[in-house]
Length: 112
Length: 90
Image (cartoon, rainbow over all chains, first blue to last red):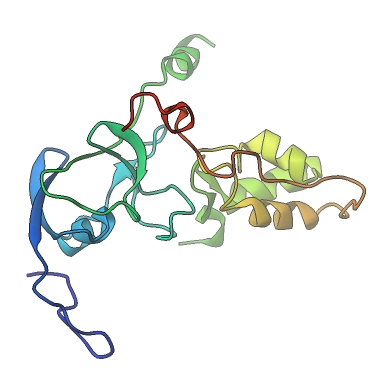
């Protein structure tokens, strides 16, 4: 069911940390308080965090150290937050970006 | 997945194949390759793919040590104007 490592050979058992619930793209998920948003979603089987602005191809965790900004999401209305670094809190509203309109390119395709 | 379909610049979705083809066709240096393909011009500011774009360019041109190659552009990470001016944030 869960994708979590509950009993790690080196780190030991995952202790009973407080659970939080948060919204991702309008759907409710459960996570462990203060774990990264990306980790909470991965534990729920969600790997697509956003879609590429131009092509719409899926994007998720890439570097996972806050370097590449591939996992950027909107958190409580603030854009460009890195899901791999942002601790998840109770009641957080997270939205992944989607494909954007490209009216000039579409126009040129037909009229250029 | 074939090597040519491997994405080098994820921000602008530029594949290894596109980079190699462009580099071979125009014999470009790193800066020209960046300008032609948009690799390294996306959200992360080229911090992820910079070295790879540079390496592809170096396969067709001699490295010119008198020229500045691809560089980090300040601010080093994308920053909200709100964070700089502290407007709209606590």
